[in-house]
Image (cartoon, rainbow, N blue to C red; front, side, top):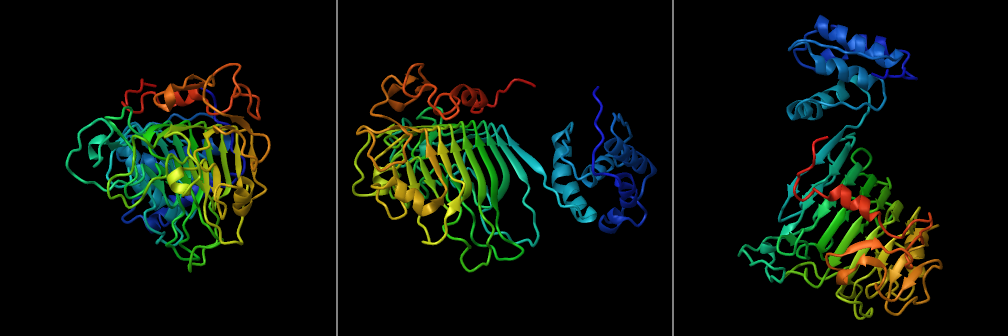
Length: 467
């Protein structure tokens, strides 16, 4: 067994652990009826010594020793990243929901805890997954981290009032919202999930109360200085989606502060990479009486976010076929719809490169430009932006008001292994095509399709092989 290396920066760790477990130490002051135990102190000291000096520790102790706190306390006081693996889900939940909140208060060490939402099928009439439905209300609360992996999210076809997706309407008019929504979140990894139904008749996503499948938005109900909402360090990586009306919203804030709250922290550091989404606004039309109308296979709604990077994604949005940008950005659809601006604030660090996208009716539009000036739309929202080496399908070719360096094609013919009219296709780039080895890093444009399919292969069934 390899030894754990000694940790730098922990010269007082052993003494700090001893103080924490003292008769009137920090744990006793917070934990009611805390009883110091010799075995617990001995184990905690051994863990602290191993962390500080390096080595390997194999510890065995009976029930009632207090083993969990004996390793958690040294781990927290070391101020290092620590991986803890439990033998049961019950112990995992005890640590996450009970022990860690108590120790954060007792030890006075700020830290985040990462939980996992893993291998679930999530079906809901509102949002299938929601984090942060209202503003922050607990002063000083530090948002932890979540890994959201290998889940399956969709709305059943039987819920679609006006049908058209292959199954009979079930008779109950549900109020459908986004498949995934995050309003106040940080340190979020979304990996290997399957968005939408595997078949039309199983289900998908269509506009009703909301229009886009994935929505990242900074909630604006909290009040400075102690309860400001957070939207930062978010990664969507190697997810697969199909049978959905429209794609992503990453909207952060449209101004520098939240309205009347005094919060000035930025929504920042959001990465979308190697995701494959197949949009179909022909099958997944807005529900009859929907409060949110058609976005016509719009791929991205963006704005108000610092260091937003969208790299190597494949967005297939061939249904319906492209129209002209008349009369509406929404009803005609966009590649990117840039949100409204306050006329003052601009956001740095926007990168959009090496992607495959459909132009839709309006291409890059918004921020005062109705699809007739992509550079103007980007300039209005972002400063120092990068928009390059994207494969864009537009039947009319380059419209002439885009940043240079894009790869324009006028049809999907010959680009993919099996385009299949943009429905249930195989979107691996064909050797020798315009998209082959055309990215800024010398690889194919678009997502790593092999990687995305491998990451999501069993997400709809949950039948993953044992590790």
